[in-house]
Amino acid sequence: MSMSMLPNVNATAGAEVDGALFIEVAQRWPVAATALFACAVAYLLQTVLKSDPWADIPMVGTEFGGSEARRKQFMNGEARNLYLRGYRKVRQTPASPNGEHFELTGHTHSSKRELSGSPPQGVSSSLSIAKITCTKSPESPNIVVAPKFMNELKRLPDDVLSFNRAIEESMHAKYTGIDTDIALLPHTVKTALTPALVRLNPIIADEVVEALRTELPQSCDWNEVKIMDKMMRVIAMASGRVFIGPELCRNEEYLDAAINYTLDLMKAVRKVADIAPWLRPFLAARTSEVKQVHHRIEEADKFLRPVVTARKEAEKSPDYQKPDDMLQWIMESQKKFGEKNDRELARYQLGISFAAIHTTTVTTTNALYTLAAMPELIPMLRDDIQQALAESNGVFTSGAMQNMKKLDSFLKETMRYYALGPTSFQRKVLKTFALSNGQVIPGGSVIELPVIGINNDDEIFPDSEKFDALRFYKLRQAKTEQETGSKQAEVVANAQFVSVGQTSLTFGYGRHACPGRFFAVNEIKMIMATTLANYDIKNVGDSKERYKNLEFGAITQPDPNRKVLLRKL
Image 1 (cartoon, one colour):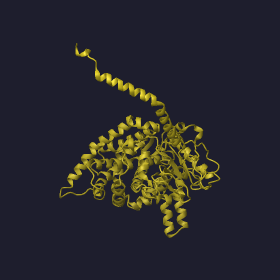
Image 2 (image 1 turned 135 degrees about the vertical axis):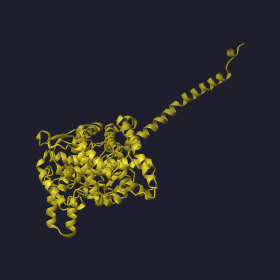
Image 3 (image 1 turned 180 degrees about the vertical axis):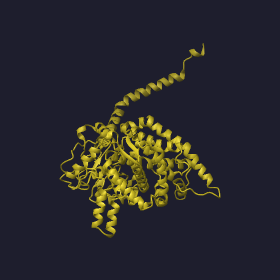
Image 4 (image 1 turned 90 degrees about the vertical axis):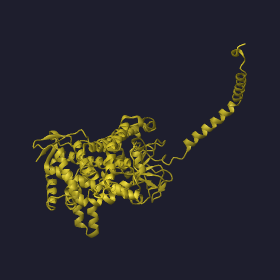
């Protein structure tokens, strides 16, 4: 008898065991199924019945339908209107004549209560609150708080309100790879860059003059120019002069790294925001935009890291003369924040380039698009600039730029009228806390301040729908005549382009207000002053209609594809 014909004792025994186990499971299955069903029901009940701190908050935009429909409306141009409606309706609600805060959320809640009537139970009758489905911070609800609470909010510690965590969410850092938790950079800007501006301003101005000469047409005939592209290169060069030194700021590899990282990062942020929140963990990393921004980081690293390495090697020489630039200041700041490797230092250069290039380009382009539609403003601004520079022998000193009061007013009005976004002062709420009136702000929220509402409030800015180039100049002049001493100085400071306050929120507020705003404002003034001193500008076809800005969710920017006409004087 062959071995294959012998009975398999082990297999037979195993079959008997499996059969017995099957019978036992079958006999007990009803009990197990009942237990599993009970657990599932308990879980669902706990989820459904769980107290939702935002459930009774009324919503703006219910006419658009469900949460996904509202999200799409927010992403496709309705964000500005939704914020404005919420701000204005809250102010008009009888229970809240002063409109203290309303909420925006990326989550879906069952409440359908409209923005009217009495406040929910347990909430102070002096409050009216509303929410908007958005995707700015899809992981947590957004609560927009009235400016009257700013002073108490800015005093809260970072373990209660986190600036970095809010930026992580709005920039979708888990997918785009942006590092928001770098204490070394704002420290270096505050302690090294800003104090250095007095001595660096003339140097930056020289770089601006040279960059504009190489980037803008030199013909005395009218030429069509895609001005946003040109401004981005000019700003990258001028900023690079301070960030990485004169040897490299015009290097095309550096410009490619700085400019295209900025562009690719914003494309990736918009792409991730456009994906439904529940699909992002599965799809975001696979998108070409997110892949491209990570590729851009690697490409930039190949150029920037050798620069850092060479700088470190040069420091070893006894004849080494320290450069007066941001890279050197960052390297010296390591003594306080710990040694960083070359890759980290290279990434810091990329990060600070993005921070400097993006908002400065947007603001400068907004100003130039406005002048192209309102060329009648140019002679007045040109005269203001010439008078200020005449007093400083043509040098862009700090005093000269402070004396460009009409240009300053025009730029501040441009930023009011064409805000960079509908809100400011974004903070992630890490711990539940209460406002001074008893209103509880739950942990997990993101709070914001309503820039778009303030900027368009006639009680704050009379005739807010009108663009008034001299709005802040006239305010400064009137208040200067009325006030004296420290009060006069306060009024003058608050009316300046660079200032932050309860009605000037573009640069943020509190200890996390943009530390680089002094550098940015000086740079913008240099670019505008040099451009107006050398060029006339108008719209193609002599149109008086100002180009409309593009809106994508909470992001607002000039249309980069528009052209203006420039003529060399």
